[in-house]
Length: 293
Image 1 (cartoon, rainbow, N blue to C red):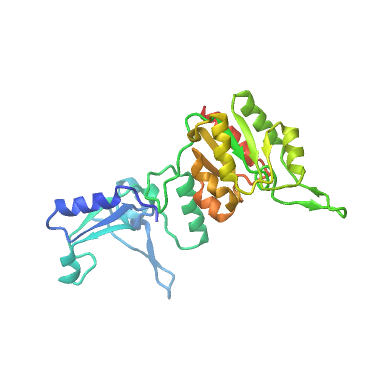
Image 2 (tube, helix red, strand yellow):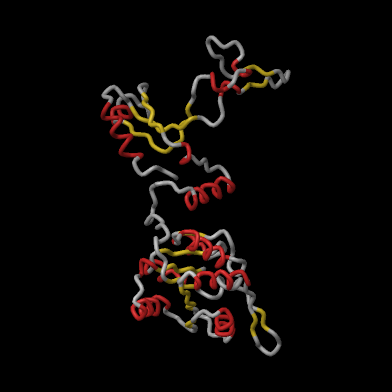
């Protein structure tokens, strides 16, 4: 699933450059050397080496650096001539040429842990790869404005309600300090929230961040806000956690989701933070922006 952008073009080019080739198959250097692998006799428990190497008596005891290089087929790409399939009744034929692929692109999906590894590589691997949607955008060179959702970003998305109907939320003090550091660096922040409870105004007043609450159409307000402030959309970072934040993602230069965001927000964000909303996610983002300056 993680394929270099030039993978298909390189495979076709290689096939065209070698008229004798039946197919081209993608391979990477093998992570495990088969010269150090064994077969076990189930009856006796005795082991015999899987492979031998001419000129090396005991390859399984030899340094791997002196053993023949071996390659593993990854499933990234097979470029096959029609005649190989139609006339030779084969998916490869006999003349198989190698397309060497950077092993960083290699992920086997056999269990949920492999899936988690693949998602990490896609998000944080820094690879130039084929994306089914638009490729994630990098952080803008200059950030002029940070726009934040409230619930699930500055809070942990939970709410406590007492017997009188009063609501309370939990937030993180490190987030407010991160926003203060941004202000000192000349980067403003603003909160846009669908929540109508007065707790939004109270918390935003405490941390000194302008806010708009009770907003059902965040995208329209965001466009109006940028126009009024004269801020370039490409210099705006938006951080959200739910589907009502998604219309704002393409309107800014960098769309960010907290670690525990809705799956669709995670999929469409340019960047996913490692921390959850209300647990230092905003501070993490502030530190990233400041470190990027």
